[in-house]
Length: 113
Length: 115
Image 1 (cartoon, each protein chain N blue to C red):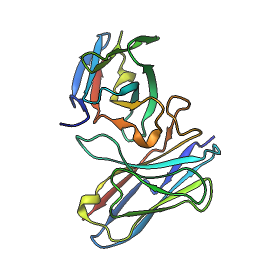
Image 2 (image 1 turned 30 degrees about the vertical axis):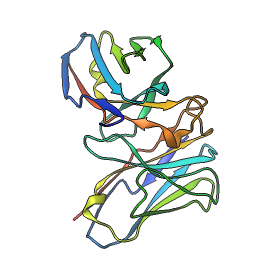
Image 3 (image 1 turned 90 degrees about the vertical axis):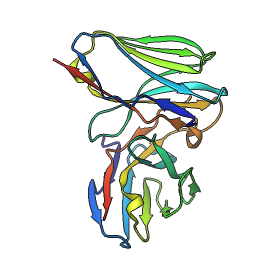
């Protein structure tokens, strides 16, 4: 079993839809969770991060963590064509460094105008 | 501000050839990383550096070597390329090693095909 799993997609939605992107993980010690957005032929860029459980909102984006289920989600409201990208989840144990961060394989999202 | 710049952006190698990928950052970051990205797999750390003159192995170091002679540059070398090294390679840098303290910035990637 991989430490972090994501449905690779591709996920195709109409403009304005609510998008739900998800990751599951196996290591219960993970407490710091990140979402990266990666446009085609570009490097990943940090979109959001959350610590432990709960929700965090930033504009149209909401990151949610359910530690009991080992499940994290990224919701995109009022999706736009500019949101078309691959979304990578990443996670780590608190206090560890970047060399211990585990990345998911990414979910490809297309928002159709 | 250029951020993290990778050279080259594309390369095709024949099996057994060698090459060096260059990563340059202009943010005065101590920490630099080399990842590879393959379909269906997350970013996997190859090697990293915690400062000028230092290098350390990541998750998948075999077949690669690195050097950090200058703080702003991190080189990734393939001595004898194999088809299994066909991948997209990303360099990243960060001010602090802890992701809770600072963001890592990625380059645009190098697409390498080994035939």
